[in-house]
Amino acid sequence: MKKLLSFIVMATLLVVAVAACGGGDDEDKETPKTTEPTTPSATSPRPSPSPTAEPTPTVEPTQTPKPTPTPPPTVEPTPTPTPTVDTDSAAAVLAPVMTNLVVAFAEVGGQWQGYAGPNALALTSLENGKLYWWYATQEMTLDTVKLYKGWNNMMWLSPSAPVTSALAGKEASILFVVVTDIQSGKNYLYQSPQVKPLSVIPVGQKYSTFVAPPGNLPQMATKTR
Image 1 (cartoon, rainbow, N blue to C red):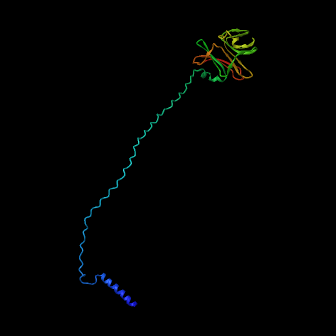
Image 2 (cartoon, helix red, strand yellow):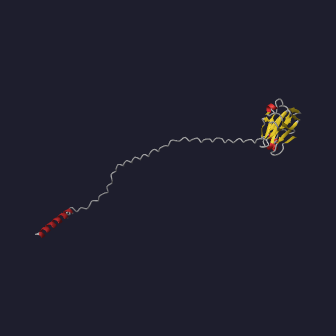
């Protein structure tokens, strides 16, 4: 029975397969028609894609160039003029004796002029029994002191007194009074108010100096430049 059933299934499958292949009838066996190539129908052209719009470049704002600062003009320093040394100045003429100079003086055009040394201190009083150097323009007597023209080394024998009061009325006759303190070695100078500053000693001018080197006797000299 099973074999019969299998045979029937096989036969059925065979019939179906033949039918699918055209059944084997002659009328169905026609010469196959040649199929002409189908000309493709004109197709509407696809619209060209719109070109992608290029982005508008960003325009940077034009920067105004900064002006180049003009450098300030170079100012050349004004050269300091070399001071001119006046060879006729009293300081220049007296330079060789300046260290020990007490006073230098000259009569210029009838006017007495004096230059006090850098180490001369002001003499303010006359002391009884003390020796002084006096410079007188003429022979004269001052209390008990007899003075001659020029330098005099005389002791003051009158009572001690301020030099200005002791010489009152004699300012034009006694120009200088000098004393040296033996203990300190310092020199003290009285200069009459009649004596003006000596600033220039020109060539040909006659002048006098009073120099007191430490430990030595004063040296008085008169010379012409």
